[in-house]
Amino acid sequence: MRPVACGECGNEVLCEKFSPAHTQVQWTAEAAAVCPRIAAEADGRPSARVRSCAALRASIEAAVREGRLEVPAGA
Image 1: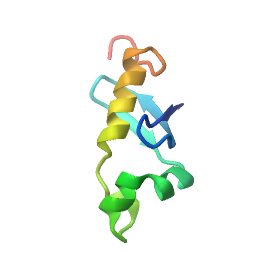
Image 2 (image 1 turned 90 degrees about the vertical axis):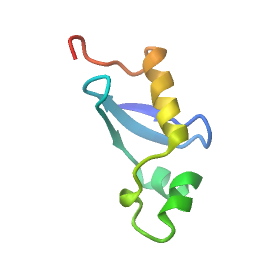
Image 3 (image 1 turned 30 degrees about the horizontal axis):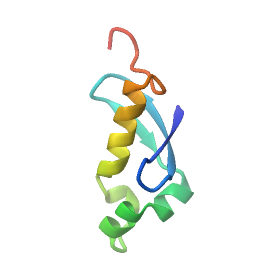
Image 4 (image 1 turned 60 degrees about the horizontal axis):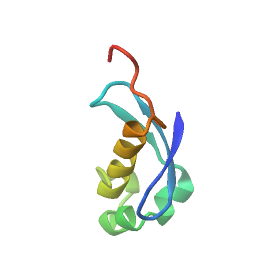
């Protein structure tokens, strides 16, 4: 897993790509607690129930384009 920082809030998560469409994201306790989008969407519910953060998704896609996060060959 590789660290990827959100371009909006700077929180860092761990990511791994298994295919162009399959991304595993592991939130650190700190990132889940301080991400403003996750906090706003969670609204008191466990943050694991929040489906995504558009800013983080854009940051992950940028990491793939820039070669900082690789999609396995043949995936």
